[in-house]
Length: 377
Image 1 (tube, rainbow, N blue to C red):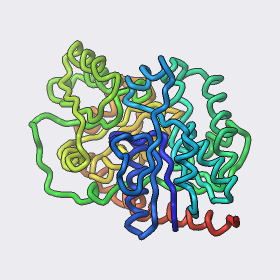
Image 2: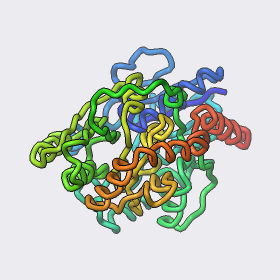
Image 3: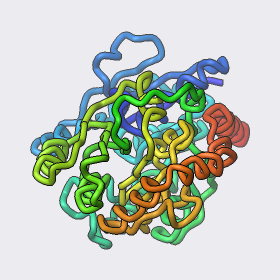
């Protein structure tokens, strides 16, 4: 098939949405499909399989986006028309201008359109200090629906959680598939654990942003009574990095902040003792699944706005959202009982297998093929 992948946000593989895009693109190419990627990455100009559009210029808003390492694509209809000509299916990654325009053009041309749901309302409203506004988030979901998702043949939801949330918000049930973004096999390839330091090591992976709430983990360790024996490793980058570093220094918590290339992350995770996922807003959290695949036991925030809590096997693997003292107690539970960590690693054995990436990518391929088969021009 000729498949067009439309990415309002692509860039470097340093976030879940971008990784999901690259994984899908790579898999479809390996399967022999003719894949064209439309994005605003200017370094891709002239590269085979890419059509590049300009970057959207929204004046002062660009400064906010830059702080979050984000740039948005401009909907250049000439480039889009050239990209989708003769396509069997168009897959949109985000409900933003480029994806919206691509969906409209494809539907007009009688081409099948599918769209992933990679952006929660809070991922947008957090940039304008409205993350906790129910009205702002509801309006954002309505915009997502009317601008994109009502137009497509099939919606891809990474989790049942985001499907149910979106359907409640828009009071509509759309044709859909619930398919995980999956975990790469490199995270399952366990090697002999190397301990980089003597302290009990806790990993936390995610962008340093408001909705990821890494500050809760720093405060928890500070309150735990274990501060001198625990090392925190925060993997990521983002606008809150300096603030988090200041908090760690002020509370005397031993914490490293580093962006790990993908080829280094599996080994780094396998060298840790525990994984904590602090995000209060999350559609799937592949980073948490990667840690579980690598053999770590997770302690996960039980936020109502996060799908990640479904990865917890029981209450020992959950902590109350925003409650540093509760998280401290959960950390202490595992710290004081190494045998419990070993037992939970074993319990997670069967759970992790269902998220192998190749299985999930085959489901994505099938979704695209089914959409194309049902569309007649």
